[in-house]
Length: 86
Image (cartoon, rainbow, N blue to C red; front, side):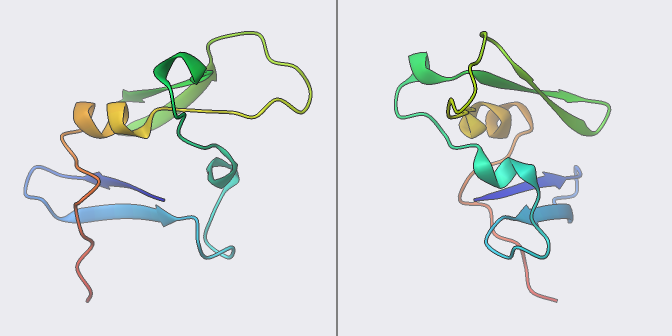
């Protein structure tokens, strides 16, 4: 899973790669749902930042699901976008 923020000139400004534990964060524990109805976390893009909130009441131990594809569409990104090596 990679989440990244880009500017209009398509230069990648920031990315989080959950594979490397040293650089990952809590979001690595949230999966994408198999069915839209299973989503229980929503993402919101505001002033260059991403915010997350639960959209239903949650119980201890309940798995979290957020639709990353929706965020990608809103941020004009695609899961096929590649980060160029320096």
